[in-house]
Amino acid sequence: SSMGVGEIRQAIVNEDVRAIQSIKGVGPKTAQRVILDLKDKLRKDELLAKAGVETVPLARQHNTHRQEALQALVMLGFARAAAEKTLDQIQHKHGPDLSVEALIKFALKSN
Image (cartoon, rainbow, N blue to C red; front, top):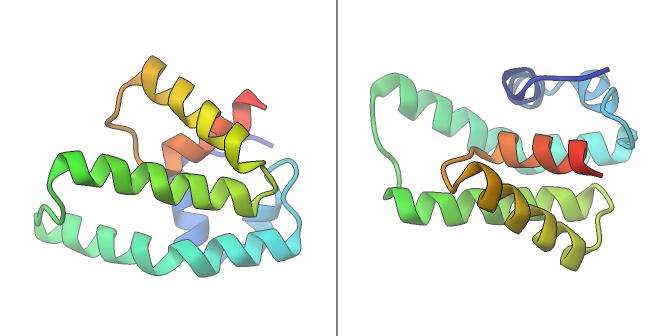
């Protein structure tokens, strides 16, 4: 089944292992690891967004999003070099303003 970016974000924030596992190629251990690594960051971003706070200057934020997406993809079993190349292609095609979730979603769809 295909999940949207918002659905992936909610599944991580809600620690919904089953929903994350529904992504092709993601098993229980990987789902738990992705949730463990990203839930606090996503919760913090959500709270700050609700408060209207810009947390990180945009240029640094994009780099942080790319790094977090890269870490998640490597945890999902991607080779680091392949994940970096895929993220480069995604950012070239869609621009640097993508969220972590969007980067991961596009990367999963491209492979």
